[in-house]
Amino acid sequence: MGRAAPSGTSAADPVLERRRNVVLNGDSIELMRRMERDSVDFILTDPPYLVSYRGRDGRQVCNDDNARWLRPSVNQMHRVLKPGSFAISFYGWNRIDLFAEAWKAAGFRMVGHIVFRKSYASASRFLRYEHECAYLLAKGDVTPPERAIPDVIDMPYSGNRLHPTQKPVAALLTLVEVFCPAGGLVLDPFCGSGSSLVAARDLGREWIGMDIDPGHAATAARRLSSLHEERAAG
Image (tube, rainbow, N blue to C red; front, side):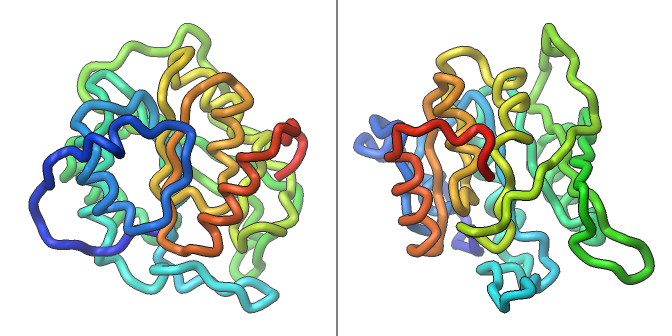
């Protein structure tokens, strides 16, 4: 997961520039600073929601208790994304002010909103919370996709076996297929268990994942090294 880092952009790292289809363990802000500007075709990511999440089993999400990393991370995502390209970011609905401010300050335009409908409630208080949500973000002038997809997508339960907020691959495949060109590069700077990367791999895209947690980075790397299809799995 990302965290705050000093301002400024480091020179691109030639070694990192040549790396594809890899999971990197480290601060995603610093790792993205080492990437070339305008080098990524699509970003699909599920960052911390800034809600100090704790699962029923006690697992937590790194850096979910602070927003220091948010703006530096979004700035770097905008820098490495190619002009005329899209990013999709999940977010915490009750922290939308912080996410929206960061996206707009970096230069992203909010061009669509996606609701992921769950068949269960992840929590229940004032309401039964039965959905996740993400914004479709654009860098510069973008061309609408040839096939418009619904803004409500079913999200089967992943079981959260590999990560406390694990997203199911099945809910991400259409996003990669529609918003990343064939053969393009997908970046996930908060890759967790690697669901977005599995979707990219299964659709023939290249991918780069990053996670600050060494355990999650190792899990994602093992998962991506498998040759088995995981489309039905979370």
